[in-house]
Image 1: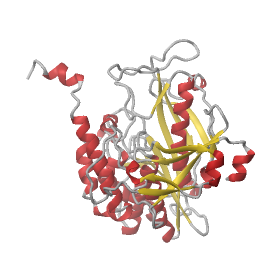
Image 2: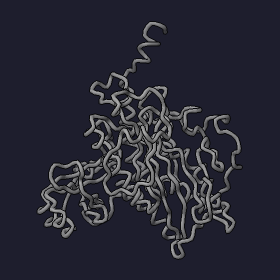
Image 3: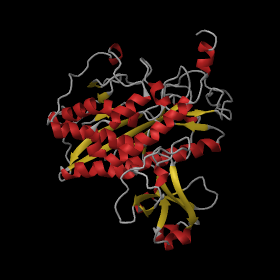
Image 4: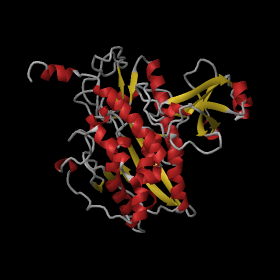
Length: 432
């Protein structure tokens, strides 16, 4: 890292850690101090703060002394900051306690723990995320509805532009060495989708985390907002993070999900069964905010149940057209507002449990899943309780993480209940 910093004439380094919401926390220091620093510390409580700035009362997980943790840089994550005025870099750090043990409720460590379980079985997961987001006009008053962007033509979008190449070109933005497969315009007004190339789950989670930072900064340069809210505008499709997932043999590199004829084998079917059985318990991780559940609407490009099918985009789990090498399942459940580390860890954890227990899925759905009953939870607090009570996910993701996550989300839920919406004033004030 020292050679890289000198080669790129870096003057400042952002030492960052992804928090529970997937936002960057950390410290900025001169490059000379970064290369000479042996110990960088931050309080463990950065993982306990909610998006509203409040803290839960979890005395068994939060040390009342607000003790420090030690940060160690991952040299493979160092990158330029394209929006900085002077040559600057950012590097993602891992978190450890003073005895050298990993912080269990650090999102990066949660994903590492799941990957270790796969590695112990001789398996190597492969991930390809697809992230949807909206570009919007700046919104300075949260009471006002969000509006689609104004492009080079001077006109705002007033209809969906699914797969419209000209509309994509209208909002070009800079990259940051991220391995992007495709960029498309999605169905919503000002809605985009970025597909990242498949690879190692931790590296892809890092890329998704850094992409969110980059696209927000790029949008601000063009006097736009970029949002990963699950449902930013009424009557428009929500935004998702679809996760394509497969598993390779650690030694041979062969895809273990496919028969020689290119059909799903028993391991893939058990993986899907694990998703069907345990993602209902993990919805609080795949839909982390009250706004996330507004995306779960019939016929609005989002799944409403846990069915699976072949090349069926109405189902929660889709097996695309494949060959034996690329046999995979696409998890379409997660909303775009997820923490990418936690969403990837969760979907792999559910599939892992299914494989270890030899679970059997339902029959593949051949019709539209929108004709079937809604199965996805549509209530935030109920999802938190199901996650808190799921012993299988606690064993895989850790008790410490589940307790901290649920505690933080309960604080956010209580904060939300203190807000009275315009809908309530409109329909209840004089009618009930």
